[in-house]
Amino acid sequence: MTDLVRSAGLSCYPEVARTVGLDPKQMMRKARLPPAVLDKPDTPIAVASVRRLLELSAEASGAEDFGLRLAERGGLTNFGAVGLIVREQATVGEAIEAFSRFIHVHHDGMKLDVVRDKQTVTVRLHLRGRRPTAPRQSIDMALGSVHRIIQSLFGSDWRPQEVHLHYPPPRDRKRYRDFFGCRVAFNAAEDAILLSAHDMERRIPSAHPLIASYLRKRIEAIETRPASWEGKVDEIVRSLLATGDCTVERVAEHLACTRRTIHRHLAASGTSFSAILDAQRADLVIQLIEDPGRPLADIAAQLGFSAQSAMARWFRGRFGCTLTDWRRGVRPPATAVDAPSASAA
Image (tube, rainbow, N blue to C red; front, top):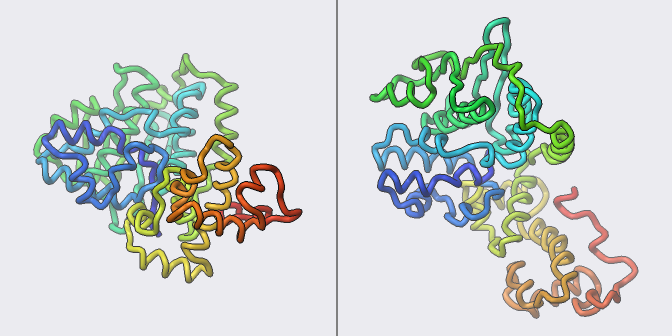
């Protein structure tokens, strides 16, 4: 199953790529990632494609620390709602626990284990993937981002006790010591950050308990990411329809697979791409036509219809009335919109 991550994780990629002499759009095309996702931070994209992009970028530029460079420019804002709830916790310990609890909302292949003893707290990183371990650049970016987030809660003067990385040492070990500000152990048993247990009690002055409670309720309502092919395709279709660029080929790009793979998996689930697209169109079209100032031709184009007339025929067959009647409030007593959509199911 394809793991997905919010495209916000690549928001700093163009800037970093240019600093090492790369053309960011060209590299994204090589990694089979649509460059348009850089403008839409909540778009789900395949973790495998992001990993391929990082490895290709490090190899093409010769920048062995490419993943660290991305982490260096990132921060809580790259993690969306997860970053917000972390920032509003009362203590650093509660913030780290919240980050561990909700990180899968941002990246459903990433896991953090927080292990405490009397003196030390170990934050262990796990990145799921087809290999026994994730590629090096992905580990650097993920663990580097965790470090930057913890540091932002303390201030720039904070340093962890140690950092452990499972892979062999790079050519420039000093770069890693400078980034993390502490001893970095390579060929370790795990990828982890070690900090003092005393650090966990540090209070966060800007925290607001009421906002934290509100955000927790909101994020708990959305935290379950789809695990099935049907659910993942549905999530991406919903996201792409809002941008007016939704085709099975585009969805395949986001899932790092072929259109044939999508059709095969959906057929095994008893559905089809056209059925999912149809259900999402039905959800969105009702929202769009409620705005009387929005031209029907623009709505047809956004929903991927070849012409306004094609949308009109589809709408009448789906809802039992014309678009004009719906806008006027003249509707059949029972419409197809009352049926549960693919996303609701």
